[in-house]
Length: 485
Image 1: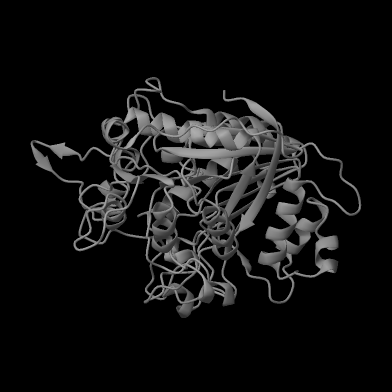
Image 2 (image 1 turned 120 degrees about the horizontal axis):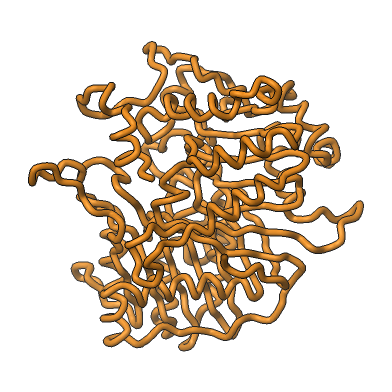
């Protein structure tokens, strides 16, 4: 397992506006040779406004603006962006960073890799069949930013890509946007772990080796001095055989999350866009249920999901979790539907209803923030990252430890309790769960009904093209295409 490092300062960042503001502030500090900006993303759009306020009108607004300014100052800029099979995703960003845009000047000391490792198209009898299915067979799903400026290192990770739907500025607006999401900023020794992660993947790739020869090897800064009271463990998912630096794979993210779940003694709270389960996750949760008061889960409604038959798979997973009648009542699943299952919601018009965060909070003592969803591909297959955070500082009436305060702020948002009185009411993670069972006026949450149909009589996401359901919903297809193990 990666080390659990003391001496860090972690700031959680709820939703895109706050996360982008912090990331922009960090990148603007990089302004001289010896500084760097390292990016790992599933999706990277360089041309939408990252800031939406008066400050943005006076300064650079897009990632393109920030990168061009940094490049002109001699900052090293490197990016690893996913190459989805048969897709143009991230192609524009890669061309920009590599100076291949038509008519555009080349950037100084910038390079990007369009990374397709783990994304091999599937062929049957010599016929390629999977190029058009999104996220087929694996993805570079990590979302990381490392900035070294003026001798100071700061790193970011979580669920937020450089994508406009975190701010809902694109037209037409994506379903359920702006997406609900959680990111974090890390200072201290653990910030260096993200630089190591980036360097491992960059130097492992043939294109990375070539860029090192033509544009210079990566800048590796010293390990930062202690910066706070948070103990942080930076974990990964890498499938075996994908990266030469991890030939046996790395499943430390699943091991860390599973260990935390099994050690829960009061409650577990989690947010996930899929929550279709993995064998090790099911085992951990079933083992924890006798020891806790509640397992509260916030998910994206299947109506907004981008995975076919997600509701069917959730039904199977939740059936396993609730098989023991003595503890079944402890499992509670909710979705963001402020006005219920209305036609407006089903069309994706209700804002901020898509749950994209990947968060675990255990007993208000331990928090996990990262890119790891609660499904097979995140636990065993895709390239993922997750940080485990324990706050060793002293808690008192004026200070809550990070996992505790993160849960309170998330519940304040979802339950419409954004007042000091609301925060006080939510301080106990067991007693205050009553507000999920009987939501106050204006709450954005609603119990998730697995059997509810939409206006068209549907009860699940289907495929955008004709395909026999019995085959598409089979374990063979699910475990090899939609949610590979």
